Length: 320
View 1 (cartoon, one colour):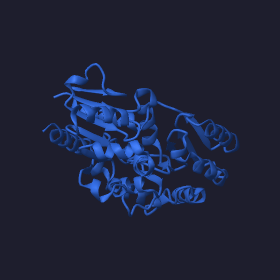
View 2 (cartoon, helix red, strand yellow):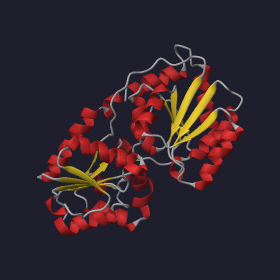
View 3 (tube, rainbow, N blue to C red):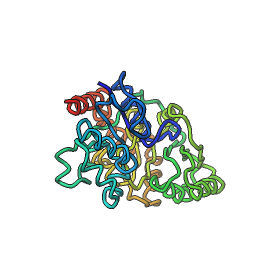
């Protein structure tokens, strides 16, 4: 059996779509390749297509359906698919209709689909290898935000929170992500100038980013929409708790009762959570420890063997 993964982003993008495609390729090897658009020179032998992104992969999805019908066709829905495109974009809606199976990456993704579509949808959580929880300095709070400078990631929430934290040199926040929006890049640079405890580091290699998440006391995640953010489960699997915007994609990853949420776009709410983490950082019943304990309960969902088993069940079904 030969399988093709269609991803609108390849290695140079260094984003969630690429990380999913590459991880799935490793899990399903050997007869798997990743392409940006289908068909290609090897298309005649393909039995199964996993297409990431209903809107951006629409030309490949349509070409597959024309050649094979919905046999072997699964569409994997991203955050912009679930929470924007499938509501208004004709090609995204058509991708959902043509697919034999639909995949979402966190449990609340199913709620964004109509009742008619949920019957062919299932959840496959992304995964990461577990890392040991490091002992971290009690003298300061080191936070990290991971997300490219683009509107969907809402970095402006962090920029607005930084003046509220400027008088706390014992709180240091690093921000990892490429500049995909010139206006947000200007804001990041201005925030570094005005707030010495904020550093924008630009894009970093994936393993370097994972190391920084592992060493941080807490991960900050401000997104306005998410399909199933890899950085959340990478933090959880490293023993690093999360402060996240209360949006469906984050609720579906961390659980409804997680105590580390702030309203999307609420800079004061984010700053207050950071300050509360620092204030109780060295207390046995403090917020930081409570969040770490809550996050540890989610590791069962993000284990590689769990994702691999779900993925292979999907491919077996599609190949029949």
